[in-house]
Length: 396
Image (cartoon, rainbow, N blue to C red; front, side, top):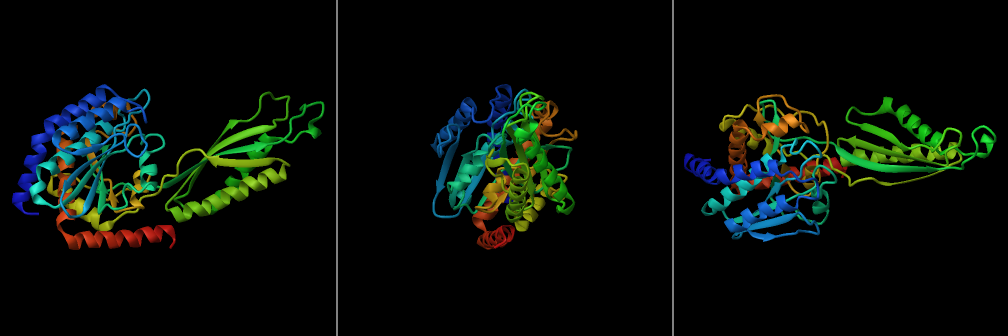
């Protein structure tokens, strides 16, 4: 990108930075939990409306979601995702106040630069990321299907940024075993222990672990296991979560889960049923061309950039990445190695290094957006790579 455009990007971000900083600090001072972000979403919507965006609020059945549109003529569609929910007790320990405001700043800067591109910019408010993830349902309802790219940045500690964030797919089940109660001393033979079936289920899963591929994670807890030790439990409940590197492998692990649950119930003469405990989170369909472009952009902005590290968790951005090309770079907001979901990271979002990182992060997203909007060859390369990588993940 030419020096003239680079200067325009910097000027546009600089112009709207004070408002974005004030928003970030205000969200930090008034944290709202997942799906309860009524004031937070309203503050963001008010800023976008005032700037000239056309806003739908609420959006897609989510009371605290929104979609703001900048219609700048015929051209590609770009989605900028905004997060703004906080954690219990910790507040904004995941940095949503900071990188949510970064997304808003990106949208405001692109409005300032509308003479530099043709197309539509959608700034989409995505609540509840810390719980069930509104991006999951939004993706299922087609909110991202027509996007040339969907993007956001995520806060991170440690002084090193990354061009993208990898993620594992995630499925959660509540598993219920039903048996027959009996006195544990007087007539245990009349009972059918639901707890024993639940324990055997976990044993069977453990027996399968030596054949797991390294990406598979399977964890469970017994949430109900009986009322008293002198009664054979007639009911037991387990919550399990499992993660894999692709949606195709998630199905394979799901098949294993079903076999283990049915076998345990059959062996103990019990019944078993299960239902989803939360929405499925998809793994990340990574687009190398997008990541390479973002690496170059971040380095040009003076960031220390590493390769994408192996996935350590899950995110609802993964669901978006199965519907359109998506990217979620990590922007270092502090040199201290503070982990996510900590009071230390929440405090770091209020300090000057974090605010400076916000400007660089917004410049990076704006620069990538302009590249996608204006470079048809690059856009086509990204789309073709997306289709190929997605189908590979799905096992098509």
